[in-house]
Amino acid sequence: MKSILLICSAFILLLSCKKEEQTYYSVYIENQSTVSVEIMPFKNGIINSDDRILLSPGSNFKFAEGFDRGINNGCGFDSKYLNGTDSIDVVFNSDKKTIHFMNNTSTSGNSFYTYNSERNLGNWQSYKMEVTDDSKFRRTIIYTYVFSDLDSNFAQ
Image (cartoon, rainbow, N blue to C red; front, top):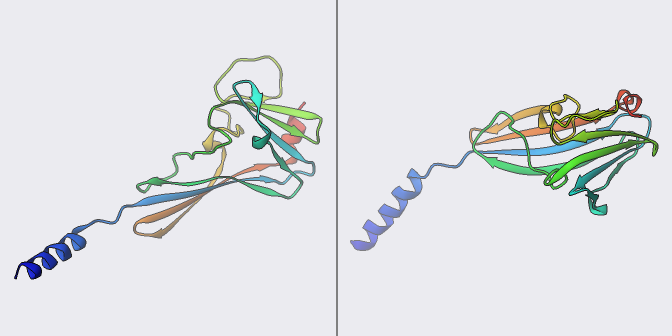
């Protein structure tokens, strides 16, 4: 009798468990420009060679992947390339550079983006988002940042 009661209790517990909702994300950087793009995150004023990303024309790179608890409508992502980053140098064709700051630093020069810019690589709101509801408990978000010839022309 005790074993039947124990089995029934375990069965009721299993049925009463609510499946946890999760939002999975993948982040891509695409180079749709006609020149090479090199991305160099500065962390504490230095560039770690493992963090350098080189994109040839027409290529892409998986910048991040992970998940968040709960269903969300896109609230950013975590990337090893952005964690602890002060700024990101983006070099086009090995000679023209744009700086993407991780704050709203005021600086001189024309070829930079503050964090709030719509073109800042470190600001998740600068990415195109594609949201798919895979099930009641799972959502997938694909973030994509695209470099174009306009970015290369902006760089100095």
